[in-house]
Length: 330
Image (cartoon, rainbow, N blue to C red; front, side, top):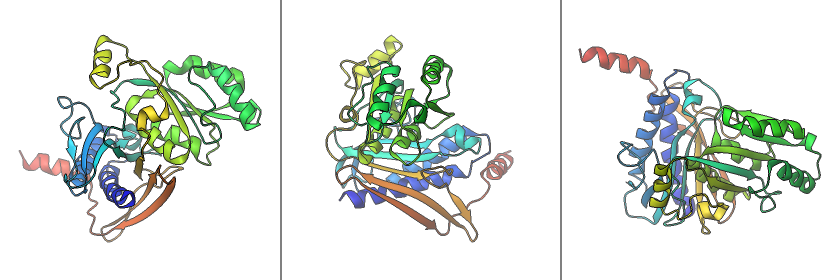
């Protein structure tokens, strides 16, 4: 059942990737995101499951589609929680950069954390360090522990972190410790996943979006890694949203199973623009397009890569189409 559902979900991320990749390098992140979201929502209708979006594009009054609480699937399959990011890296696509993805995580109903769209402190690590570090520790202690466990000096370790003003103090502490730093312009989900790949990255630290933290947790559970998180509610409204979503103590330390549950979780993704993990959409001659996707299932720790060639795909210039529609409406 898991492999069949995962394959159906891959068709959903493929559709989102195919549509959003048309906007790569065009400087319009909103249109890229809208294209991905529309494609994902339409393709969900063919998936044999009774799904509920627990992490989506926003709450019902904020998002026209794929909002939190929306039902997806044809209603005839297993009851599932679904977390989606139709386009992880909207600015990445707009600027024609690498590592943009279309992502879905799914687990049996009640397993995925209902994470509000606020920041979350995060600590992600690969299998060698899983279960051996704590987000509660100062970053200096975390680095020393990791160095001892890995049997490598700090100078040979690499830590990734989003290049943001809010991280200035942490980046300074990393520099002082002597580790290599991989500064990420975008790509919160991919930053955490890299700790489980042959990327040379040992740790991912810092704060990023809570929804992205849950999506990353799904992938890391499948890959044998770990992520810990703590939500950062900054206003009374943030606290209220957290409690409304079932988080009685919004600032509690969240372990991996707090985010994705103890039952099997699936993670699927399709590359929109090429990166170290997945190749991006490639448009071919004869109305064809090629996609590269991954399917993971935590129950078996199976990771499958899928290369697909889509025939009869019409890859016209979306900007030209928009202009034509605007002129014809005058």
